[in-house]
Length: 447
Ligand SMILES: *Cc1c(COP(=O)(O)O)cnc(C)c1O
Image 1 (cartoon, rainbow, N blue to C red):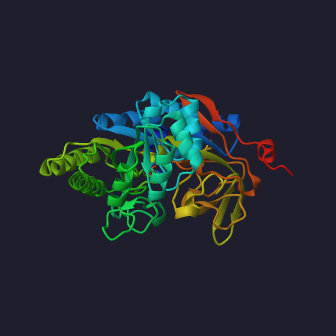
Image 2: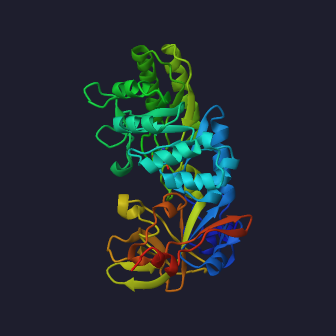
């Protein structure tokens, strides 16, 4: 505990204490406004690795993976690799006993390069290229989740005997999240419809898979979307999916043994954001599945769940250096990164906080906008946040909760190299992905 936390009456603003949401639990304030992340001083990390840079708390990633395994020991927990597809991270989650979701030949190549056990890998995607399917078959990926009648035919022709597959179902559940990350409702591109009047519905898909001699249908999959905080939506999905399994047994005479309920568990980016209740989720899912299975005399399927953001989101931070401060009708704090390392605000209005680190300021806090360096006015990192009024060029800003969908969504917009990913554990930092250089950027452009 810091002096400011012990003695708030010393004249420090409440915001001079570390707000709990967003940061990994071990993060704390040191002397003189220093931020201690995974045991290391952030200003030292910034001096060593440069800015902008992503930092990831290894122990926190492992702790969250282990917490999922403990909460649902009977289930398979598959890390959604698209959230942070970095070799070291895949090693950590493999060591913690997790399985892995992939969506492309590239993600399979990363998994393969660290020897991620093939039987614990799933391949997803609403349209998989022949290269994706061949990469999965070449490595012997355990399950491929099929998403269209075309794909059933394509994989059927490519696969060897005994390839296990799941069917992705649209459970027609509105998970109450942003439209661009809502994937379980009717009218979006993923999954086979449950509606009998839909031409490509689940029944046709089951019949199509059963007609392929090389494929073995083992179960169903659904994914409601991302940043879902309501456990009752998962309860509803579990019950609906058991109903579908029972319907398939009745119509097609097959008893499927696997049920994959996807991921999407919400994390708090800012104080006040809803947190996902993992214990409540585990308990209520168990009850819902038990009830629905026993009332339909259906054997309890093996459950798979697929958290991505919930494993790595809060374990990561991004550190930027302020390049310019512009004071007018609003105060703009411009940093050396932006929508190329975090497109989430521009993509779906994601909201972030930021904190001055490496310097203690007594200046009263004022409302400001943290913006990036790119040539769009929508290049905003954190809008309407409160920062010390004396913030100036050269200061460091840390943004919490950037472990998921930052590195993996980063671009080279304005031919800016992507930031490094640095793993930190017990105060020791290690470069996991190096910074992209101008040589890297020029190498693909053949002139
Ligand atoms: C993206 C995705 C996930 C993970 O979503 P999070 O919000 O990161 O938990 C899980 N399963 C599938 C099929 C996905 O597409």
